Length: 223
Image: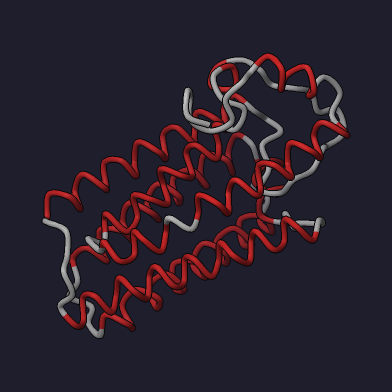
């Protein structure tokens, strides 16, 4: 096992755990917020398990994902907007807990957690199908078009999964106001997809033909 890779993965994992915890529980003003802990659980337990699997079976892919950096200015803007959206949504949800704002019923939080885990499973399937999957918009050496499985249904199944992941988070937290904030992800991801398709069409052989074969980008029969 690569000790340096393991150390890097653990540092980033616990840094993310700390950041999310602070964004949720500081605005909430309490650690006794079960919906906050529910989100932490469904977010980080599968993430930790997936990291262990990647460490054992696909360390090169894990290394690429840990060290990924956007090179295009437009994509850096998308990442920055996404980060602001997350911060705002988590803070709003925490404030809702503190000040007793209207909340979704308890069953909605459990339904949201179920949807979140289903989206995680979808994301894992996308990673299994596409060895070139990356957090950044880039074309790697030897990369070819993947058009089987989920990629034969929509062009960007990873973003379909992340859309479900992100929109289910405020539902887990029971915050309708945070859900409204998270809706900003729709135009953000649309902007990213359009730019990504332009890059891939220019740089990846066979991608223009793939665009003609697979009509839907994100959700079949919708977009």
